[in-house]
Image (cartoon, rainbow, N blue to C red):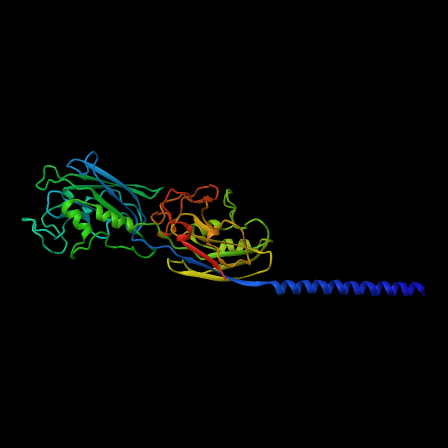
Length: 407
């Protein structure tokens, strides 16, 4: 009888304990559910588009002017659809200048192959229309080609191309010596227009044919003075970029599951974002990791300057978030948070963002590299560690390109 009472009491105690533990577990689960929260993270492209991706000047060696028989070279980067515009004064004139037709010297053929060798046929001789050719008196006529003068006999243009760097070198030679139009060339200017993925931002650099001139080209055509044009170019030249859709991950632990600074790419999908802005592979890879609690995508198309994308995410106390988006006008760069971020953070977290080189593709000038996805290219492979982007190119500061906020 006592044994029966004892066994019954033990069974009752065990049942009570189990019920109590179960209730506590349910209570804790309910508590965690009550403490979960939702936030919205927004990525905004705040870069200021500039007309030109690169620009500069040239002049003779020893003396600024380029005399008959002398040459000068300029090196610049470009991708398909981009062109090189230049301008220099026909010195033995009142207001003539050399330049190509708009938007500049064609650099790639219809198959996307670089054009090299003699491209002298691209040069034109223009009358600025601001001085009478005979008297030098002030006039106001539209810019027109000078008739009956073959500019390509006075100036030789030769292009050389480096496919790895996507750099061209243009050599300009004064071949006017001994002709009826012998002339020195003044110091000159050059520029490559920015391309936004569908069109050039400036398809008529420097001047517009059949229209009245402007102060900058007038100073070149009349005096060989490039100061005003260089001031204008410097103010309107700069690297710009689009951003890819952004991938956001909610995770636990101390290690960012997407990348590790100083290590080579892990092959789980970061390369696809850094080179092409494709989030699918990394998204699927992250979902399979035990410490990852959620993967979210902000946007479904490139994020142009002035645009923004956002996504909601769910998290609990103790969770962290990380994000990544492609620097679109690059070969293999990406923006990501450098510091760990509490998922419960709010406000502007842009200061936690850095620009990284994934080390998977050879770099070219941002927005002017023919192997960049912007131009339908594929980066040439390399195998380097993930590192911060340095100062090789004049890339705008992070806060001048991307703004990240959590609300």
